[in-house]
Image (cartoon, rainbow, N blue to C red; front, side, top):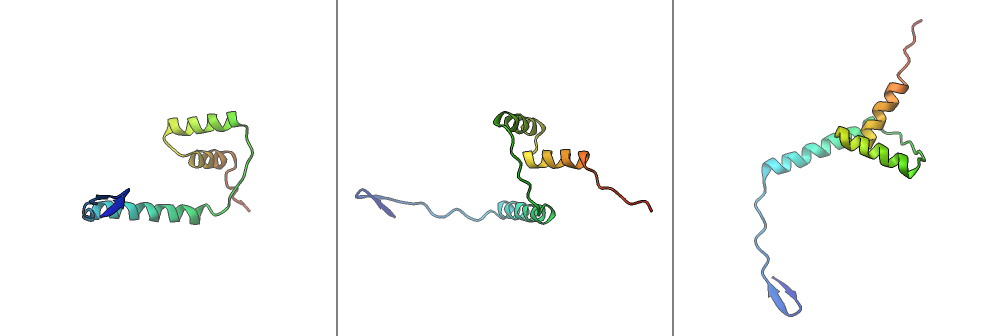
Length: 85
């Protein structure tokens, strides 16, 4: 029980653990850590607020994050160069 302004409010029992929810949460943590390892260099870029808004809206329309979309753009514009000789 918690006392608030002289009143007592009963706090219900803690909900039972949901194994499916716990697995889902852990799965996200694994995916996030792999992104950190893959993308370990940070790039800071100054853009106008209007450009940032356009990028953000485009990413939202495509169902991706701004970072994912911009990584794709950079990969297309600056592909890895393979040596031939």
